[in-house]
Length: 444
Image 1 (spheres, rainbow, N blue to C red):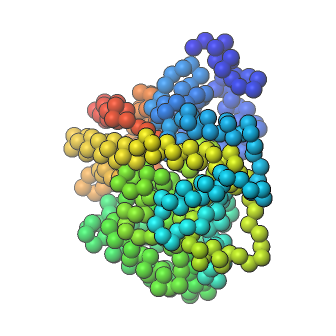
Image 2: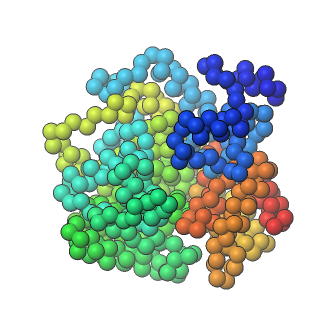
Image 3: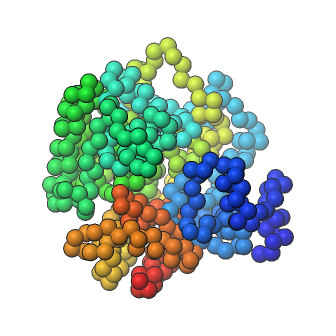
């Protein structure tokens, strides 16, 4: 594509700048903590389905974008947003069909008694609001979280995110937060899958006791239904049922954070918490709910919602606006009509089988885990010792990018290949990825 052609595709009269100039302007005018991916950053100007395109028209297979859940720029979702934007966008102090319809449709996907919906602008806002709900209902302030968890970027959520407060620039653990060992059956203390769920759940009483020693009773236990920043970890069987029972016996509520993994990504279930046979007291969702449009939600029980009725209004200028709800409704329609939950399961199984085949042929793949289109491949330098290999993971990500496949890494040691593509990811896409990964690993 010529420079002129690129310039003509830029919307709104914005000039098309080169990568070096954009990097320089970012450094001068934007937050210096705003990061970019890859040693040589990409300039992405267009998306379609599972593909991202740079300014030269080069296509990249997107293996990490769980935000554009039903594919980049899905025509049905785009059309819904355009149509509603052209007609009306306002706040929830006026009656409108979209917000009620969306709440009803969302609740219809959930088990009882999850039936009261609060709409927000993001997953961070959803998790922040959920904390207020939990504290209003229990009249307690303590919070239990998993080690290396991330629940958002607001001040209250950074305090609940060991991924942040124990990382670079973090200020450490605050007194009202208890950190529970991550239920990792590959690298963790308990590795027998049959017993690990119970044994990891049994770590909770000590943290509850620690909270109480510091003057805090537990209000809520935050736990992702599948662990993202922790390293693409699938919870061992029985973990949530055991953990929820312990927390509830201590007077706390149980929150399922599905900001990363909701809406059919798990494949065998629409909601990943259902894989554990539990029903949380509060559910939070974000990223995939609007396919890239900023919207999030909290769903809870009538009893907990009633505790929030204190006289203080919950008003969110953009939360639940007609455009956001039109887009979110279109996402639900596409998931159902294109059978994307079934696709996530079928293609996810294909990817898992292919990765395990590569594991047998490449010693650097220590573990393959996942469900649906939520998958992690952990790279190690010593298979027996399970020694994390951060450098290898970084090399693989860069080598795959050179082959026009976009990956990223997660986990405490940053050595887990993160595989969370849009759920329209096809068997053909999976075959291309596996072939290229095999070639990269062969090259060492």
